[in-house]
Length: 274
Image (tube, rainbow, N blue to C red; front, side):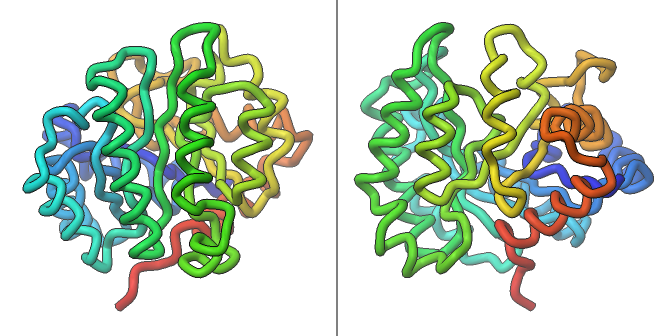
C-alpha cells in the first residue's frame, strides 16, 4: 500500500539518534511522502535542517498554540521569514488548544491570526491543531470563526490558493458538523492515531465525508501511537495502521486508498520549487 505521513515531528529529540533508520523503515513500509512541521522558531529551523539532510522530506514552519505566549514579535518575524524557503510547503503547526491551555486564549488567537495571514500571503496552507476539553467544542467553533474572519472560504483564499486547500485540520478531533463546515471552507482533513481513542468516535463518520483529493493520514510522530505501535515513540512506518482503518471506514480497497493519499498529498502540498 502506498502511504504518506502528512505530519511527523522528526526533528524531535526522540529521533536524534536514528532518524536515518526511521526514514529507511518508512520507505520500506511504503511511505512515499513525509511532511515535518515546526511548532516554534527552533523546531522550524530544525525542520529545515532535516530537509537539507534528507531532501525527500518537506517542511512546515509556524507557531503552535502551546508556544504562543512565549513567542515574541522578533521570534515570530524570524519564523515567518523561514516560510520563504522553497522546502517549506505549509505554515504551522498552529491552531487553538482550549484543553491544556499552555498559552492564554487571547495569545493563542493572536498567534493563530498571524499564522493564517502568513498562509494567505505565501499561498502555503495552514496546518491547524484544534483541541477542546472532553465533551466541549469551543476551540472548534472558535477556529471556524477565525478561518472565516481571515478570508478562508472566500475570495482571499481563492486568490492565494486557487482550487487547492488553504488549510489542513491536522489530527482530526471534533464533531461531524465541525468537519462538514471545515470542508465547506475548502479544508483538507488529516487522520491520525487519535481516531482510535475513546471520545473520538465521530471521526469514523467524518472520514466518510471527506473528498478523496482532500484526505490525508499522519502519525503526529512521536505522539499518538495507533494500536500495535510502541507507546513510547510513534514513527512514520506506523501510519499504515491508521490508513488501513481509514480504508475500512470508507469501504475502499487499501491499494486504491493509498494511491489517493499520495495524489492528495501532492495536491495539498505542491512540490517545492526548484
